[in-house]
Image (cartoon, rainbow over the protein chains, first blue to last red):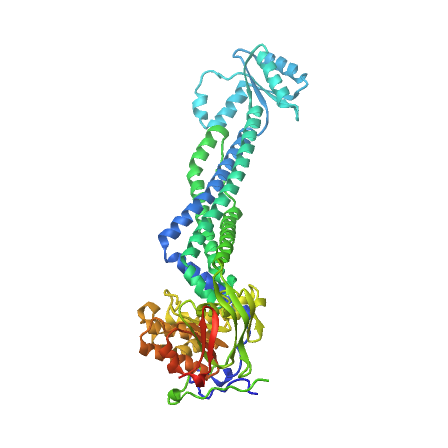
Length: 328
Length: 261
């Protein structure tokens, strides 16, 4: 019984070493080679239609940049809130003409209040000094003949006092004789905190929704790509390609889309940072002295392209699995 | 025990230059000469809607044999080949390919099985955006062969079909006959145990058709089992190989090579 046929004819292209020997198994090298080929071919395919690729990437980048931008804005609002309301004191401005003795008397009364932790009396001179430091126009203030500022009582509510009891305290103080105005920065701060909390949750929800949008954009792009290359997929499968082999370039396409969009989104966010830097600094100067724009941390800027690439891969994977199941 | 069924060297090819592809070893291995590589046992195929394309078909094709499957349009020729390539599954019966029951080949096993086959189609099924060499290289790349060896094999296969000079060209720049030869080079480059061709000369003029059939005969000479679906009776008669005749999905004649007139 004869087994392998003889091959009587020699080939100048082949060495004798290959005769009668199967190809050496090279799973790792082959796997690496397939991945390299898939990554390269998918990148070339994307580059071969630059306008379409750019539009897809831009849509994804905007979707990714929106939550980043809102996150940045909220961060800056938070920082500003922190700067403006470093303590939750209530400022009680006395009527002009109320002297130091009236201020001391009022301070003593307030210290007896159950919701008050401490009261500090600020003289008009101290107020003028603070104002001069804060606004930076001390020269102009010193030209005034008289100090127009009133005595101010800085009242710190008892830690843990409820918003209602602080509101009642503020109302009581407004009713006190000799009081011109009561400014409750604590309540303002609490409201800001509450608003920021809502904003943060909204940004989170928006980020999830836009991440789904990114998934859908990549998925749809890959779906169209697969549909347009169904003939090629058919040929590959007929010559023995596994689904993983066929799918790999589309997964890499998803990764490329995500990666490029992530880089572009990070770029958008940095541009927003730069655009905000000057106005925020000016605003900070007016309200809270020196205030620098809050920037996105470098780790977040680096994480965005990575997370976007993962999203792109996931979108491509979901759609390609479904599409290739239909094609097989 | 199978009896040797080594084919006689074709007289037409005896004067040819050294065969480049022939010296490349078979990666898949082939079973003993003369043993059945293909076995159909009471195979039927009924499509959705009730059309029965094949009905209780039974035959064997031995290793190293070349056979034609013929019959009028709709006789079931293409379905038969599709069953072998696992493009379709039979409704009843058992198909054995190189000892492997095809019914038991799962989804993951299909690519592995297809890598052991060479398939040639009437419409070539080439990737038009890739060069001739890249098209021929596909099965080897999918199989994970090293680039250097792939290159040798691709060149050998293209040399075999007479298209080495066109390796860097796109298929669209070639004639229909040349494109078909690229398809054949792709089918044989991995030295498959079985070469199946569905109307490979359907779009070609008679002289080109003979040329293509001679190529298939050459591959048979070096041990490849060849099964060709064709309705071109004059060409089939000229080739003097075994002929399996189908009619409405049934086997109506099985003519041995020496009995072909």
